[in-house]
Length: 412
Image 1 (cartoon, one colour):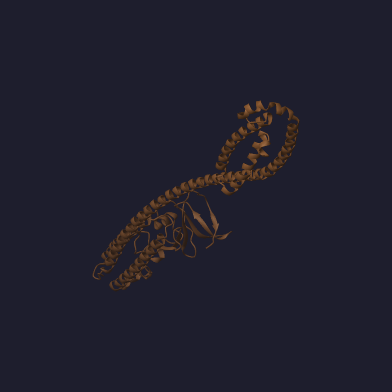
Image 2: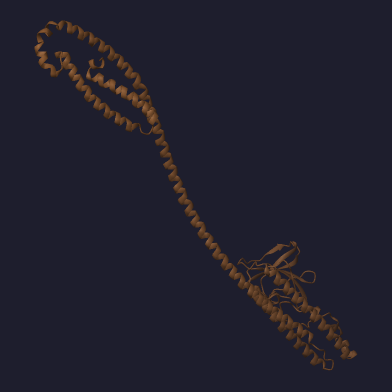
């Protein structure tokens, strides 16, 4: 009955407070369905508010007229008695009003007590929602960075794949070129073996003719020397072709140099053996007077055939000069003979003996009065090559376009 005496606004507030308390507990328990329950409770409160309005209207009519609207007829009949008891009813109404005011204050205090936790809970939920939104934003940013990094890695992977394919293609081409060079090397090796075999056969098939005349013997020697020179020229051509098939700093140059030196050594031995045999033949076939006239020439040791020249093998050692020279492609020096005495050998003779294609610079070991032992560079083809202790020591280097007189202190 206390609620029935309250005004309409206080009654609604009280009902809302009760519903908020219930909805607050339900929100804490439900979590994700809090908003749905709040909507349902709001609709229920509206219905209850309509009912409360009807009840308040009835109560107002009861307080003003002393009866309900349907009892108006009875009120009109008892109007006289109501006037007599008006003062008593006014006192009762005032007392009830005071009581209602006190109860209204208590309800307001209770309402505040109940609303404060709900407001705190609402603030906490809003803060939590803000934190979750910030976390979602960070996750979106991280996802964007991850997708960009993934795209970058995909691009790098494609680039690396392209480079790998290019490397594989180059590797296959290099393998193909290497196979071609190997086949060319085998062909040149077969040619070289064939030339060496022919050279060995021609040397072993030479039979001394003791009954021939001295002039015929000399002509035969020259003919044999020319034949051997042709065989040696064939070997030199094969080596030269094989050398040109490799690069400037290919390690196969050392193998070719060793092979060339072996061929030169073999030719030296063959010519030495042949010269001794012919010297013995001449000694047996000549008279003492004739032998004496040629004793100086026949007593000289035979010379070795040059590894890079086509001069006659029958030259004497006194008219030959030993030459030791180094190249850029090999650490092993080369030994050749030039059919001239030391002091008569020119740069042209040295170039003809070395017989290398291309432009080169030629340095020679020499003794300078001021600096001592030096490496002297010679440019003119007609210039005399300096010697050292009865022989010529030279360095053959490729010419890169920087020409000029140079004399460097010698260092081995």
